[in-house]
Amino acid sequence: MNLTQEELKNMSEDVKRLNPEICTETGLIAKSERLQSKKVVSNSQAKESPQKRQTTIKMPYIKNLSVNHYKFSGGKYTRPEVAEWKNDLVLEIKRCGIKDWQSPLKLTISGYFKDLRSTPDVHNLIKIIADCVQAATGLNDRYYDVETKAPVCVKGQDPHLIITVSEL
Image (tube, rainbow, N blue to C red):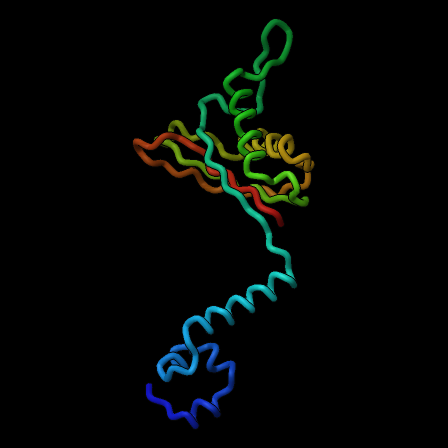
């Protein structure tokens, strides 16, 4: 596309922004200038709406992972492996530095499993994960927006959960 200098001057700035190839072919706008203009736009947008933070955590899935307790000698107890998993998740969340985040939070939970038979109902994991996020952040889990995704079966892969925590 060969445009004369006169035709380029008559074009609106919006057309030039939408079609940077036109300007770069003639050498009017260098690549760094285009990048700087994009940065200016993103910085002005960031001032108008604060950047929402997000972190993703990969946790191994263990067989008895449930908020349900077992009864033994008249009391209710959490399985030791589940209590250890919960502590690990709380530590991992704290390590991500989301202590100063604002409520409400959005939790997205998905999982990868060996086969359909070993796949849990991901909805049953919401309570235990929300409790861990609450313990790590101090933000009440009643105000969380929770989304679950369909579990994915991949043969030969270690079962794990992908937990994404983000500000709304």
